View 1 (cartoon, rainbow, N blue to C red):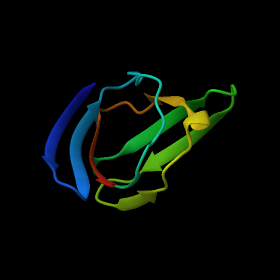
View 2: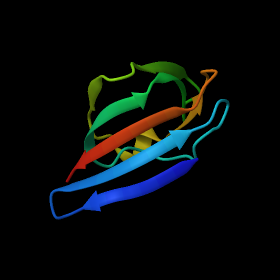
View 3: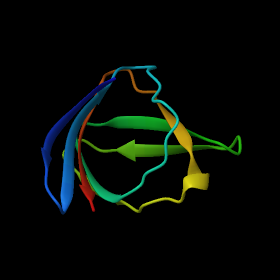
View 4: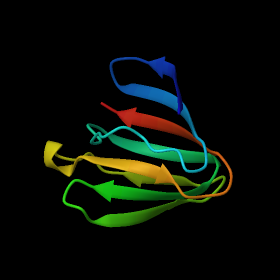
Length: 93
């Protein structure tokens, strides 16, 4: 997974990420609420720590809001699309 910090200040972190098809992220939880803008969208399968699975669609060219999570919401994500997913993530500190 390509994860590049684009900008940071005392209010926001901005990242550009690329997740290849079938690539899985490390376990994590979303510390900050954030805006996700899909440059090249797709579908993520989110594997929750409790064993459940959810699917998140990132439509190309659209922005989505995702709320911050508590540490017990640890998860990993897999790109189940046939093409790389490229996102800009703006974390709100």
